[in-house]
Length: 252
Image (cartoon, rainbow, N blue to C red):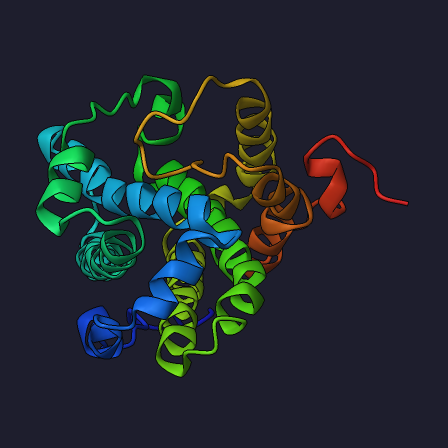
């Protein structure tokens, strides 16, 4: 009989305000950032990182039936995502000239619509798969952004984006561990779920403030097609297709 190990959430303790505070008066940086290719990405990430709160509150309102392990993960996860939002809000405030309170009011004024993703948030297993896939895709997206942050030549900013990316990798790893621990009997369902998610991404309307599946740019979609689903399958020990096949694209 195989031995089951307790679920331990892997995380890093850090604060965006500690890493970014010294940049407040760096007008040269903010001018460059506002005119850089990162400009639309930063605002999009500000919105999507805030939307973790929207998803968290939605699950609470629904009295989502969560195991003790998932509840422990969720509290660590929302703390991380709020920290990420604080960092992106800081960047958006200084780069675009809005006060942080105005940004808060703007993001809170949107109404999320979870109806489109309801099939994947109806039970803990499906939600774990959706979040695991999404966190992997997001981590890969941030990895693509790292060189652009580095060109701004601010070590603290480079350190910050890497810390955000590391958190997303930890979220992915924690969710994969949770799936292995509690849902090993359901890993055979994952590939079909990933195919359904990929089809939804291709056909869905605009992003609706749901936190998950927010990757609207062609770059992020390409990243997801290049293997986030396959990485999930490998992480949970499931046998699946090649990366491109999950997204309807057989790579050659």
